[in-house]
Image 1 (cartoon, rainbow, N blue to C red):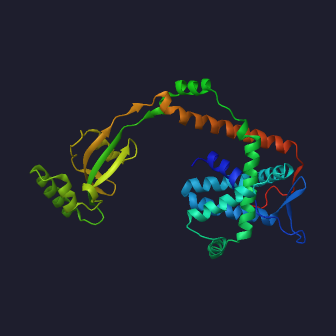
Image 2 (cartoon, rainbow, N blue to C red):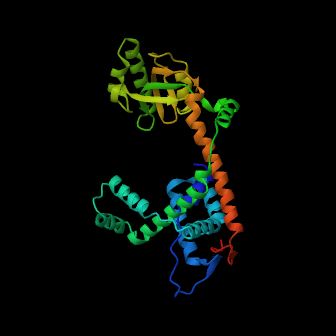
Image 3 (spheres, rainbow, N blue to C red):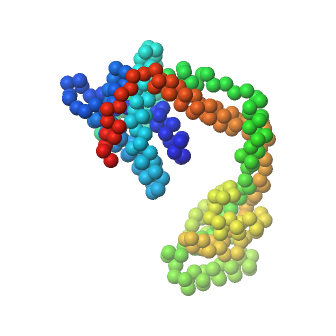
Length: 322
């Protein structure tokens, strides 16, 4: 997932933490019209987002998005609050959507009653009432985006055709290869045993033993359907294997291929040639791409307008002091 897409999803889908009781005295991070964002809210949201990032990303990508989070979270929380304020100003009601969403969640998870859902959430440390309130607020924000942005987006045939003509390379379908593989693992076989096994298998193959029989007898990888691994598009296979497969005709078996984790014999079962999608084949993909581009632009414009029309005062621009 790219950084831009991740933050667009966060903007629309991630709800702010619930406001604390007015009786609790604590630091205010920002004032947004008649509401405030507190330090405890900010920290709760930050910790929740970090947890989400850890579940989705790793390594350099995680640290990159972590830094982006530190820089952008307060602005996102302000945007969330502005959208919620606008929903309340417009008296939007999402009770039926809320009910339908909860029923769908229960159905998808094979839960028969609200009581069972409450118990399941409690077992995971989730307060059901808090969750329902946050879900409702998410739906309210989405309703605002739909009213102010989504239903204003229109595409015409001319721009769809123009995109197809300008970027034909985006609609080239790469070749696909359906392969069967016989695999010998380097980690579990000493080199001398690997050499002996490769020699034995090669001799049997030359003597007419079916590839599928050799897979059943010797392979240390999948053996179902003669080691059938299904279809792979160009670029999805390890480079050494792909280079060998590209030289094969359907029905042919490759020489031994040394890959990162072992040795392979590969049989090409079927090849689908690369082709250019027609306009009709590509139309839905183009429409989706253009729609999302316009949607992102219009959301940014709408949020900017909301901020310009609102009273926003940031009292602590670095709440975590990191």
